[in-house]
Image 1 (spheres, rainbow, N blue to C red):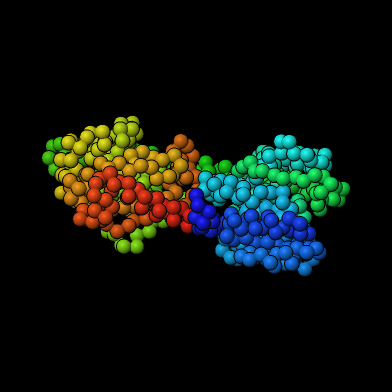
Image 2 (cartoon, rainbow, N blue to C red):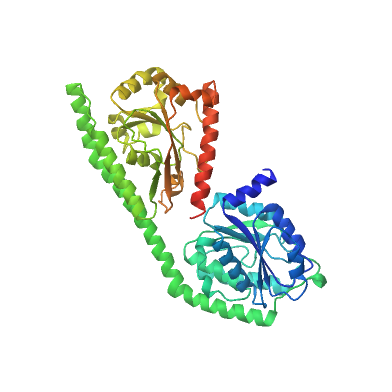
Length: 498
């Protein structure tokens, strides 16, 4: 990715860099300038430095400088940096040290991890093979890792690194942080207790020769402080951390069970109604929309159940689309919930499905009675059936990707969708969906709390499709690119506030 676009991508995600520094005059300029090459938004906290750090920072353009009158410790410096970042509207902050130990070029590692794990706390795990370290440093890291696993039931390879990406909306106990090094351990423990996912990513580290190192670590005093802190955290883990974990597990279980119960109840109630509709149509040769109204009702009930547990569905329909006029609805595909979310909004709609849905033992009968059809039938057999449905006022919903993507990305669009729209002479009604793949992942069974958003965009008349290309293949490619742009904007906007 070109450097300009990469820096802009960090800003779009709401990511800034915070560098606390104390008497790092020999390294701070190099660290800050390299960080600026990676990220346009750099905040430096000068923690009461008594060397020439202040003069050096004043000569660097494009950074925010927070100056503390006296040295208050790294924890206090981070607290000031976080509060300033939140005030400026940032969603995430990458922290690195000003002594040259961390490589600013590894900021991209955290950016990529944030794309994959939004809302998570990303912890850099230092590559220490071949690095000459003091015995005190090695022992401190092992000591910290052990007690962290005891306090949180979670293992991390490196709990002492200062190279991290923090989700600023999930910084717990910020006002109670200690002022020294141990504050970083507190942030990890409190985040874990409150259900923030911790993700480790390997990063490079530089240690100069022992005689050239500048360290503010005081072995006896700081070990004593860390030991007292770990004793307190172990006590709090029993009376606070463990109950938080159990309550969170119970809530997730209830969320999953409630959603599946609504799903099963809906299938149980709708199945005999679908059978009755099928028999009625066979005897009278007439069709009825009663089944679709009932499916619409249970879809709305499922969506409300999702919202009760934190997976609220937001619909963005700025054009006020009413869905009364038939159209070909196209939408990206992430989860089994995609159909439910659409049915919550649209009453008279049928779906083209894959064979797995058509033959499903639980909902297959409903799907067939509702006149959903598998794509495998082929266009020659599908087109007369779809034309008859359109004449009865139904829209046809199709997922152009053909299958769910595992990570929410927009997969290749198949051109058959645009051929169907052309032959039926129907408007294309684009919908863009975000979040269902995180609420119900493709290869998972639990239901997760995550916001869902459905964007409804202006119709595209058949005569306007030429703006996407003169051939069906070009139309599919260009429409997919447009979906990618909209989806990325939606994703960045939502994940800044997760």
